[in-house]
Image (cartoon, rainbow, N blue to C red; front, side, top):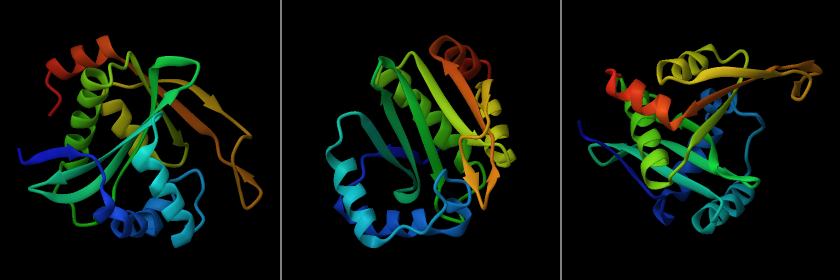
Length: 174
């Protein structure tokens, strides 16, 4: 296998700044504007000590490939919102699937989540397909909440509960 998750550390500061500013990452983020190094450093300091969010670096053979995050819903402690990306353009084929599998196992087993929620910009068909491959079900679409250049971009909401993940995972996610 060779894939694992680890907590970010100070040595990841510049790497994450580069990933977050890569055009192929930014275009799929809710805020697609370049991130200044100062703003990144403020965010980075927060993630190192934040109690309502969990960030993990996905690695292959000890080489960082991407980032996954989980944020608690303040009203419901066992529901987490997740975000993720593979930051390395030359990541091995299948890295995203391994990232998803490891991240969801981490969320349901270690963080004791009962449900994971993912929100995807409607034009990001690759992410929509990825969510569905992992067993997520689309449950809502928000309209007129995000605009770019004056045009609305619908946000598609996906959910995965623990029982569905355990069933989907044992059913042979490859």
